[in-house]
Length: 116
Image (cartoon, rainbow, N blue to C red; front, side, top):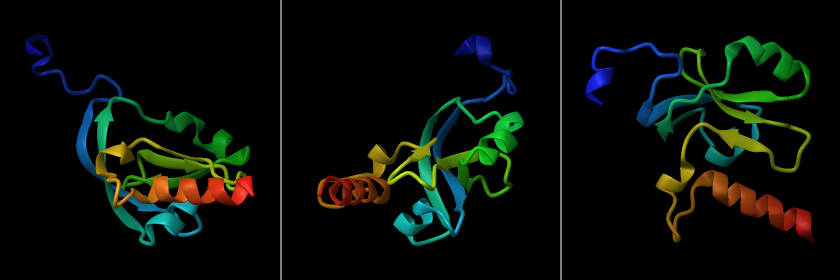
């Protein structure tokens, strides 16, 4: 928008397009992707407030994916839960009926194990 020309730092600025993410090798996300370095698409201004990282991890949350510089939380998990993974990315943008995104595939697999 014209009125935002020159405005660069307004908190969590818009992240649009593919961004790199480093996965924790002990995470469910790593288990799904089978690699530590991924790139996922974004379209948002949201970020985890870094002031809360310690309290989140102290209460059982795993910060399972971070930006390469470690500044931005990209994925979180609750390890004790059968399938609790949240991501800043939009996996639906890379998923296809004949080639589901790893997170969707993992979710369906976890649901099938849990339901039987």
